[in-house]
Length: 83
Image (cartoon, rainbow, N blue to C red):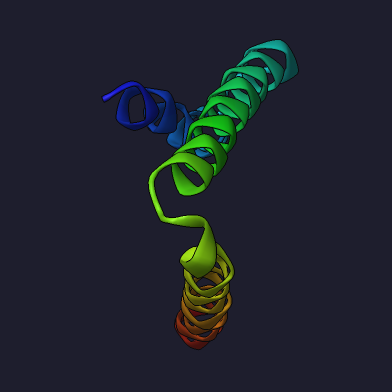
């Protein structure tokens, strides 16, 4: 639940830029997004290290990393196709 709430801030810098806000509010939104990202990263890493058994930790990490890279590249492809 905490990670979900923290991840809401990721959209704030984009929303601030889209709204045409001055530099200070955009920077504040970026700060909130950065803090939320750090909270999510810590919770994600802690969960990955505590819950899977040690003998499958490398496999779990490799699968999540592969998913992140695979989905990240697809997002870039879709974004480039729209512009």
